[in-house]
Image 1 (cartoon, helix red, strand yellow):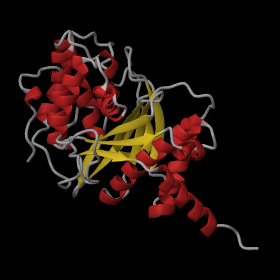
Image 2: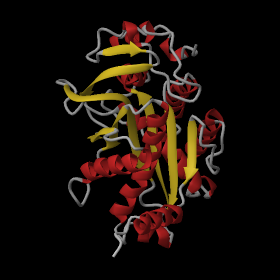
Image 3: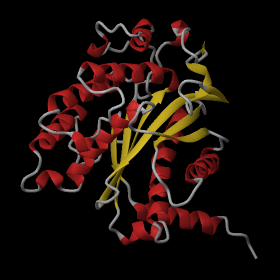
Image 4: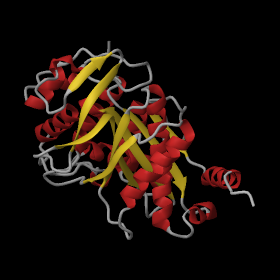
Length: 334
């Protein structure tokens, strides 16, 4: 059984109450994110059936949070993705992985926590806003995240990439936007692949921080590329149900994107040398130290692949070599 996060104590709003009612939790495995036990989760719009250790979930697309529509696919997990350091040497792309049935209750809980700390419901929690004034409140919010991480309700993975290298520029044929989405591809590919192998091919919905792109249809291309790569690698079709944008602020913000922003912001602060600069923000230094202690790792270092808080320096040259080998292997004979 997993431990009950302290943040649930005394919770009485509908979302958090639903989360408390369906505890205790059932493990899928020691390394997988736990799906909150669905048998009593009858009041939500998500229909769930328990079959052995798997969950059959009727998925809903959150393009309109007030009028959700079914995706029409068996989506079991959500990935919530954000990026940091696009203007710095080291780019960090991070994602939370969580069972889809956990998402509404966790989102409701973090919104309630923010309001209890004096944040506006539509306000954005982000690394750039860490200051002495808000430090204690940010610590409480991130402690909430680590309680759920330790309870195995979600997982975190981040890739760090050196954007100054010639390999990175060549990776996107000189197009930085193309290079960025290829890095996103690899983070998401590894996350989805692991889920597919451990959860027998359950489909995944990917939610990305909404950003302006020079070229349209970037997310659709990313979805098709992921599905093609996953089918080629593990032989399973259409694992990615969709890749959709989500705002990080405003009335319809995705609150878990804000959690990712703080985590990858702190990682970037270390990797890009912000913590070593004279006059570095005392609040950000304190926040970084706190997050490293909670994560059980220094952000200057990579972790093991199986760590629930997973940090990895992505070598673009390895990816380019594999792509070249794949093209050579599949080149038509003449």
